[in-house]
Image 1: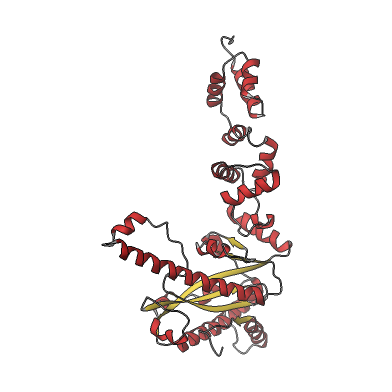
Image 2 (image 1 turned 60 degrees about the horizontal axis):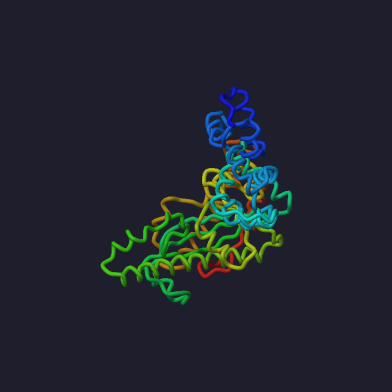
Amino acid sequence: MSKIGHTDDEKIECVNEYLNGKDKHYLAGKYSTSIRSIDRWISKVNTDEIELRKRRRCDYIDLNIQDEILKILNTNPIINGFKISQWNEAITIKYIKDKYNININRRMAKNLIEDSKKINDISYEDRVYNEIEEMESLGYNIVLLDYIKIGRIASREVECLELRKYTEEKLDVNLVVIRANNNMYLDIILSEAKVLDKSPRVNIRELSNKFKNNDEYERIVNIRKKQRKDIVNDKYNILDKVFKEERNKKIVFTTKWDKDIKRILGRKNNFKFYVIEDEVYNDLRQNIYKGEYGENIIYYFYNENNTGRIYKNIKEISQTVKGKIKRYVLDSTEDNYKLENGVEFACEKDSIMQKNRDKLRKKIKILKSYFIHNI
């Protein structure tokens, strides 16, 4: 028989017992009430949302194991053996299955990831720097990866290389800048589409309606797929070159989000990606190149006016890259010299500055490329 009337203290005590793992049927008997009443007490009591969800999952995952999982989900997946730094449903499901032999669905995995973020009281920026420091302490080789559009070139000027067939008349010229611990690598990607794929998911029905018939629609879709595949191939080949050049093979390519990362990881390789939000990533630097006070290298290499520049031939691409390297070496060493010595002007012929220039220039390596010569 249900007890008529319960004090507030009894209701709170019952809710707390439920959150600590007691079964509702047991509690209904103990407090002489119905399960529906217990549900009503839970909804009215100011209950911690995360604790409540943990209790609801208790039939599938023990509370103590949930605490362990939420703690793990606040660490970097790379350190736990995965290839990418962001927990998603797939790798969360795999981790829980491998570690605890517990099967969960994608919805529960998503909820666990969301709960882990809510209990993390550290700022995103601090978390990134802490994780990078932890990876470095474990021997990982942190490599920064950037793509900079430096102009366009007619596809007919490239066809002589017989690399591939192009469908667009103009190609984007993208400078790839890869900053490892001891060397900086440069290469070029020519692309018919944007080199970074951050586009939202395509509305297939809306796209289909733009064309008069299905054949035209299929043709456009296939062209876009091929353009994207070519870009992914070029990215993969460049990263593979760096992987072979670097002595430390525990490489983590650190970069901004790009859909092509998933496509690259879908292939058989040992690549790992640490993906960082744009604002924080833009402040990252490899001090071994620029010195403690130097600007980020992209500050020296990027020029908005270059994005629309038209190259007449491949040789002009080489000359532009050569000029950017020279300007970067001159300006960055001069900036560092002025900051380190507390002066407003630096003597061009200063022996220390010249030594720094030579040292920096030797760290810049051009990967074997069709588009950068004689540098």
